[in-house]
Length: 53
Figure 1 (cartoon, helix red, strand yellow):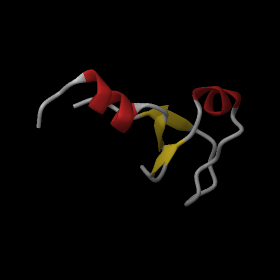
Figure 2 (cartoon, one colour):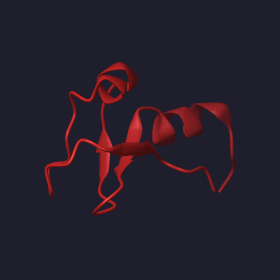
Figure 3 (tube, helix red, strand yellow):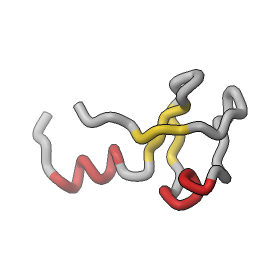
Figure 4 (spheres, one colour):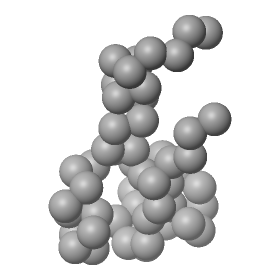
């Protein structure tokens, strides 16, 4: 797969991963940093950015 900026921003922008159950969630950066977004699966509000491969 070719790597170009448009594709990376589409797949990785505003995507976070729950630290407990490893579920992916798409949410705005500001809400995640304020703790207003929680995981749908386990309910925890501790999220990390998804890693680039």
